[in-house]
Image 1 (cartoon, rainbow, N blue to C red):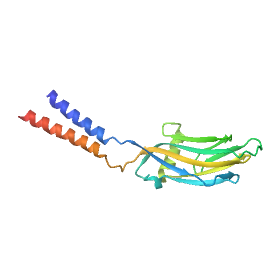
Image 2: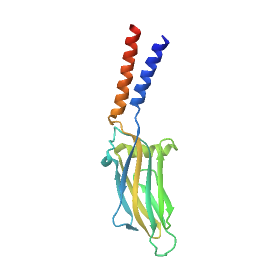
Image 3: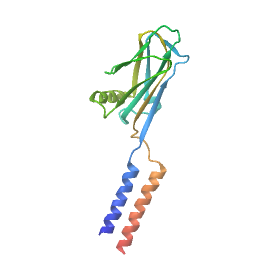
Image 4: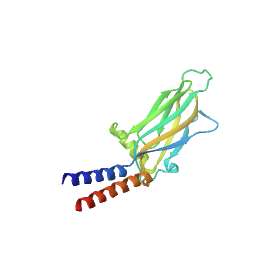
Amino acid sequence: MIKKLKSVLAGLALVAVSATASATVWTSTYDPNPNLSVPPTRTWEHNLGLEGFEAGTDTLSSFILKIWVYDDSNRDGNEGAEVDIVGSVFGGSVGVGSNTVFNVQGQDNWWTWWIDEIAFLESDGKMTVTLSSDYGDFVFDKAVLYATGTDNQKVPEPGSLALLGAGLAGLAFARRRQQK
């Protein structure tokens, strides 16, 4: 009886391992070429749908939005950038130096309002961002949105299917052996 139970548990473990979804990262880059001066205000959209994200099917667990800005070298004093995710509750400011990378992060296990940010992005896979000047002028180099989640339409890899098949064959062999 114990051997049979071990065989069944081993088979279930193989099925569970093969069915586990792995994390997927979708990346959307906005790279104005040539680089843009700010002011005026700059607005752009990241669309994860163009990167394979399927709204309503796939799920997100976190995102990082990185924005590269730098001083325009006019030696005109302090400069500051303001970032706003349009239609959401997020807004933030950062001082601009010779090469500044401004990170906006959202995870579903952070404070409650970040959950709204994830849901906001997950609803259609789009994030509209506005970059403006708090003071001074600077250069906007690029922005990259990294979103991590689960691709629920992913087809299992052949290796996972082979592992599942081997586990099921092992179960069948063990059962046949016990019956004899």
